[in-house]
Length: 120
Image 1: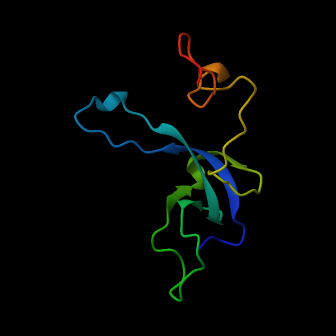
Image 2 (image 1 turned 180 degrees about the horizontal axis):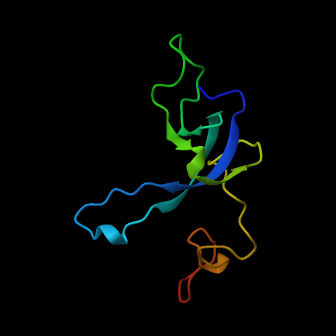
């Protein structure tokens, strides 16, 4: 279950790198970015969830199938709170003028007849 804040955030952080069969001296931490809901924060770390149940918590509490990150504050470069809004990924933007796969005269559903074809 998410915390009461349910704030959508974007976080940039320094991440560890696991390397194998590479030149050790060439390795360095990487800067990563993640977006998710801020579940918990304290002086030492934050907990960020990017995938969780949409249902109410069970009697056992929490979401055993949630996914996210626990990041040390010392590794966080930037933590931006995003606007509070719900993401609706099923909404398609309206078509812009002139944005068609075919010109209107080339569509199969268009009632025109091709050249040389007799009218009934």
